[in-house]
Amino acid sequence: MRKKIVAGNWKMNKTLQEGVQLASEVKESVAKAAVKDVTVIVCTPFIHLTEVKKTLGNGVALGAQNCAAEPKGAFTGEVSAEMVKSTGATYVIIGHSERRAYYGETDAILNKKVNLALEQGLTPIFCIGEVLQEREANIHFDVVKKQLSEGLFSLSAEQFSNVVIAYEPVWAIGTGKTATSEQAQEIHKYIRGVIAAKYGNAVADGITILYGGSCNAQNAKELFANPDVDGGLIGGASLKAADFTTIVTSF
Ligand code: PGA
Image 1 (cartoon, rainbow, N blue to C red):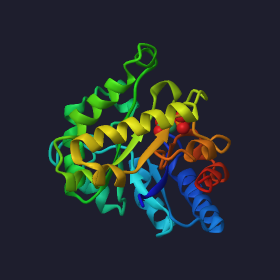
Image 2: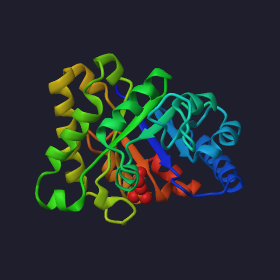
Image 3: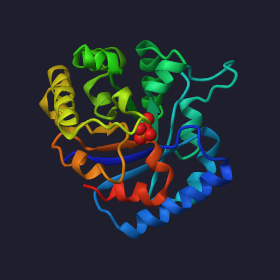
Image 4: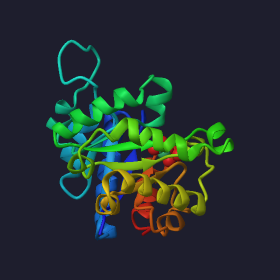
């Protein structure tokens, strides 16, 4: 049985005080929902991590949204995987499409980040997904295959087993235009097949593959009902504790 996960990606939202407030609401509502067998994660801005960790305790896991591609040293403004780990975070989003598009993060850079995160015992949530023109040109399968192979396939099977994949079609992120349930299942199944071809069926069957992109309290149930969709990476809807908790209870 692979892990079911719902991870909130707060992006660049919430002051520290607002973030602590939201974390406290999430903790409370997730505890009240008493869901079993779902790992709930909130991925906050770096400066929130330490305080949010204190607020969350152990019921909800903590993640960062990025980490540096270098282990330490003279890299002004960067935050290393080791620093993320030292806050009590256990997950880190790597390769979000906004990082790829706005900050020039290539698969080669992301591969370095993944390695550093794994060295620290952090679980990378590695994001892949095509832009609209690629979907319209019907090359979305090739796009995600390339992102997987260049970003991750240098890992050993053991290392790879510690990665979570998030498929996020860029055209669905923050647009209110989610992938259909069929589109999600089709590409998640394809992704699992690409992983199976590289690492074998046992590894592929154990990998959690999340869907992200306008996943919300209304559509999560249908998306999560697909056999190869193991949960979601949630942006906008993770900023409201009630909506986020409804998604957590959508399996
Ligand atoms: P969204 O963002 O849920 O607001 O579309 C998802 C993400 O970017 O991870």
